[in-house]
Length: 140
Image (cartoon, rainbow, N blue to C red; front, side, top):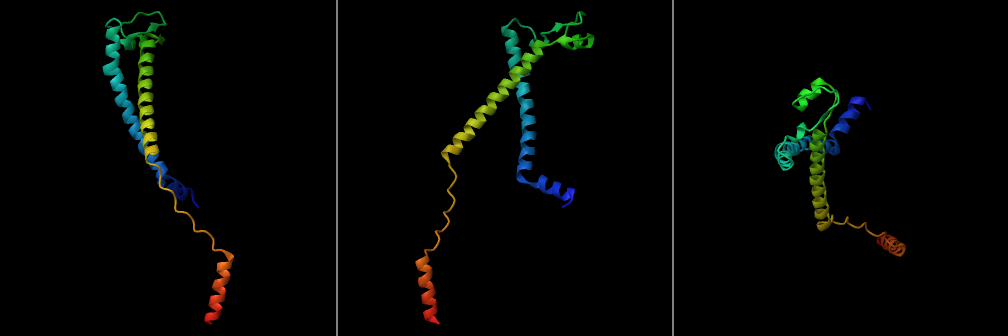
């Protein structure tokens, strides 16, 4: 089997397509969560702790003063703990939402168990087979 044929069979399998769809939806969902954290939650957290922009909490390691994180990064090394906390909160929210989704899926699976597979017919007993042979021989 050629490489191209083998790859085509692999790519067409349902699991690969499902995985691709999941990655695409996950990327879009990650952007939504990032926006919720950056645009809605972190401003409220910043307001609660002094009204400052939380993403601009940093320590300039190069010693050059800067007004914003972007300027500080241009000037040299920066310990951007505010940005890290924003990303960490983003991850925690995303992990919590995924946990809730998996919990719901597991609850639905438990409520609707799959139908049992039909039982295989039991093998015919030897005495029945013998009686069938006798009946067939008598018919001849």
